[in-house]
Length: 206
Image (cartoon, rainbow, N blue to C red):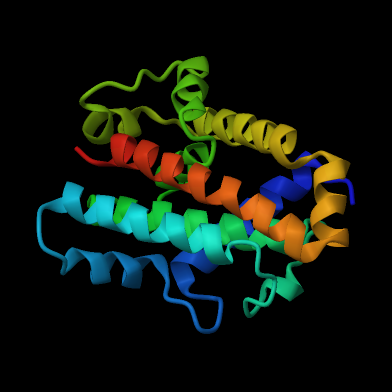
């Protein structure tokens, strides 16, 4: 199965909407996840660290499972195992944004959430569109995101993810050998999820 940049973009929108609306049966949405961790001991940063640690493990152990309710009805041409990982990762990022006091329904926050999927490369992506990530980014940087800048960020994220996931070999391996391919991919997913959480913390926490 060949993955296109358009399919990646549609999958991101699908996963994000599911993440903030609780669209997958048996899973909590980003708001509920944020509320759960807001009750943990410590300040917001500590709560986010706990969330990242738990969600990274969740991605590493169940990110490749295709049996999540609704995943099999994914309306775009993208493997179900990849869709499930995107869902888990975006839900974590949206929960971090919520814990940090941001409105995840805002297109600016959504664009930042997508950028976080690129890990540390998110800083480079923002730099490419003229946004510097400094100490005051969460407070001031988000306000500078115009519609055109948001569009550019989404395009760059789509291209990077296409480069990352667009290899036919990787997709065919996970499809032809679901257990071996799934476990192999799961190790990467867990590690990358942790990196995404850390960059989300950097971008969203004031």
